[in-house]
Length: 190
Image (cartoon, rainbow, N blue to C red; front, side, top):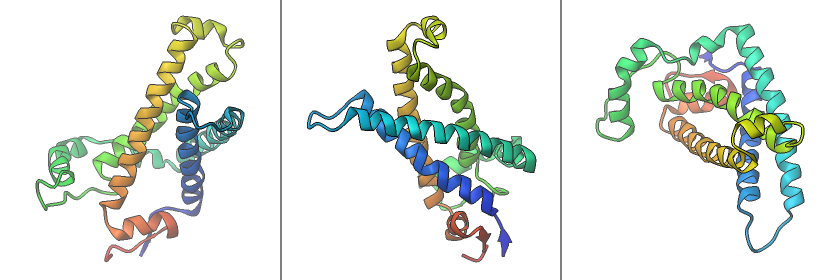
């Protein structure tokens, strides 16, 4: 057995994952509240709290990744791109042959690379909506408050899709790799 996910990585994962889901669901609720009612105030409070906690956790995770230099594991490399067509054929059940990757497959690497880049866009936009008077100038540059809301909404839909893709890629890989996000250990035999 080898350690695939050290304890801090698992803690970051299982802290950030529910916060991301809370941000997506509360954000969608805020943008399109159901007619049956509910508390918009509570939804905004949950969204704001989840947003601040996620921002803090995300910055801490990036810092930890830089210290450990594990950010190199998530960037797609040239050999990953060459395997992309075979990977897609496997993921779409067009071939039973699963391509081998070092630690993460090319789909996971694209997601892990995309999320920090998306965060560089979505986090400031979220703060613009949270305090529009404080950020009046950038809101105006972006085309106004409604344009910022639209950008956040479409980013939220994109985030929801990438979370679904992440879960799909985790569930269609080996059981051992799936277990490793809970236990840290990776037994290649499972």
